[in-house]
Length: 375
Image (cartoon, rainbow, N blue to C red; front, side, top):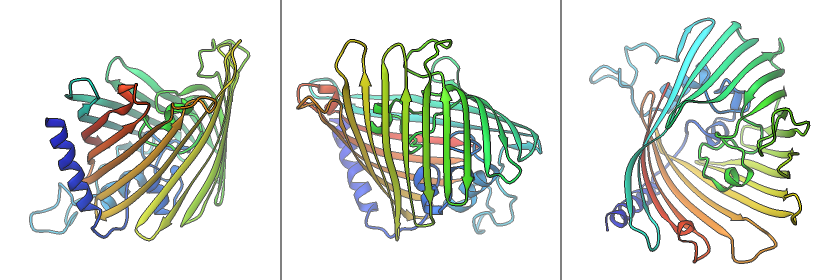
């Protein structure tokens, strides 16, 4: 079958790549770890995600890309050409964007295999800074697939020393690792991902290696906006050049039922390999029903096979009810990421899902090829 041949070829190619030597990377939490930096170094949002800062745009194009489209024939990458565009129009105005276009294949037991093109996501970013480095108004709008949807719109005020900030509006909640993959179990189970931004206020501290963010929002479990029940999210982390560790807690009081979450996460750089891990425990209290406890975990390793080439391996587990048996799920992923030139990343990935045998959809094998264009 086509899907089996494609998956087999992809696994072989990715396995061969794993024997090459390595060092470096771009975008996602593993990049910040490899660079020994915080998320705010490369993103306008202090907790990561969305539009890149000028530094983040230049780092991706000049440091991580394997070559430059604008390079002169026969010349070194970037030789004789100006720096890449960062999206900055002037001192007060900057724009950005992301587009992910996929070719997805899947084989689900007892069902026909599928192969289809899809626009996975497309975002446009607008950053207006009436007072540069201090006051910013930011908009993140999803324009595809489907109808337009606002992901983030907030005002951001920094202290003079850039050691504290206040944010108000609609934003992504501070919790766990800001993974790009919303289908990761730790993002699915927690419900905190790039589709679950919320309205409220957030304050943050950036004190040397320490970071802390506290958000008070309406709540994402169906509560009406004028409901007095609110959601609290707290994230704290400590960052060193070779490692980092953090913890998250979340309390969401809602008329649809309360939720309590706690998690720990961390990262370690061991030579050419960057390691990430997260463990979350989620407890739901449905009205009139017994509480349900979930546990989700992720371990990820990233190797830069060559400049502009990253090999990502992840292993995930999800127990959707600790009091029930036989419902545990596992997922293993292998993804090859290539930054061929500025503003472009190509990805080839394979995912093996394992769940209860009677649930066909939880035992799917997936393959995808993706063009990620960004600025």
